[in-house]
Amino acid sequence: MNKIGYLGPKGTFTEMAAVSIFAGEELVPFETIPACMDALAAEDIDRAVIPLENTIEGSVNMTLDYLIHKHNLPIIGEVTVPIEQHLMVHPSRAEQWREIEDVYSHPHAIAQCHDFLTDILPGASLHYTNSTSAAAEKLHDDPSMNAAAVANVLAAEQYGLTIVNENVHDYENNHTRFVVLAQEASMELQPAASRTGDKTTLMVTLPSDFSGALHQVLSAFAWRKLNLTKIESRPMKTGIGNYFFVIDVDQLMDDVLLPGAVAELEALGCGVRILGSYPCLFSVEEIESTEKKPIPK
Image (tube, rainbow, N blue to C red; front, side):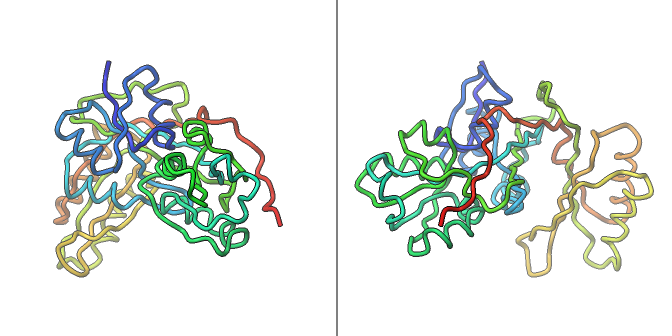
């Protein structure tokens, strides 16, 4: 049985993603993304499942930065999970939930529910936790708190909380993309029936004195008819104006087209690193989808 690390505690969306891929394996929660990746690098676990991108809030920068600057841990798969955020309280405060003074959750979840929190709980102070489930756990551990958490159904069940308002996120098309990391690229993920496609992710650094370098990079993919699903810049942390680019190509690494594009980029003086070539999955097993309700007035 493999050990699968994920961003915990129990009841997170990351746990949902991990269960959808690794049902029957031993799941090991970690308090932070870096702690999970450090454990994988130290071979304390066999795989790691961590969030990479949300449709509303964009990339999880900590994940990207750790992948680039801290550890060489290849991506061997991804799973996309629909995200449904709910407002929950300790059962003793279910009748007075509009009077709560504090709301706890992960920064991305708070941002995803901005309109609801502003309109319905304008006087509440917002507090950030390492995960949505950690916010639910905090309420469970201290029932005296006049507070609420924004988290999912599993967190409410895990920590005995009462959901007082469902689907409080501002946009219905809310999904998070999670990646599966391994110790070596040779480790494979057995795709499930929910496989939706394939992807190759590259990191590209541009030569500092090459005018029009980014245009040349894109051209290397364009004339080969390689479809790019994402291109994003992140700071190299070596000085102002120094950036690398993360590029997703809509296919697995092959023998001709992608190696040809990489060779062309390297001939231009670019640095290229393959972060992974992997199957993409879509999970709908985490909770029963509920119709989004209007915000109560």
